[in-house]
Length: 108
Image 1 (tube, rainbow, N blue to C red):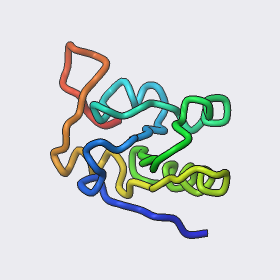
Image 2 (cartoon, one colour):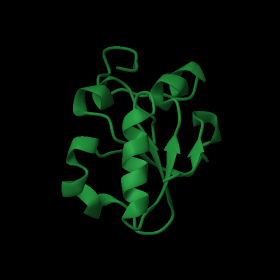
Image 3 (tube, helix red, strand yellow):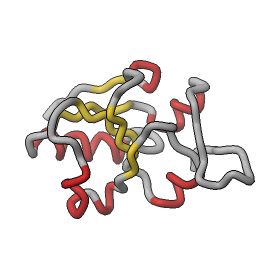
């Protein structure tokens, strides 16, 4: 099954961005307005996803987000994969924040 994909620079400013990386990856650095729902806990947290509108799914490099995007689309959500993930987000010099104020955010 195919699904829509965009690069990090194509994610709309007001997009509902879902970061599906694990906790330590999220803590190291993430997009400022992203919502964190780890892929490993997605099924338990489906109620945290908005029911209307596009969901932009991002991980570190695009593999996990592609799997999550496909599953969400098969289950009634409108999901779009962010290709290249946070690696490409960082390379495009897009904003990055960290849960640790003592160091610069980075992609783990």
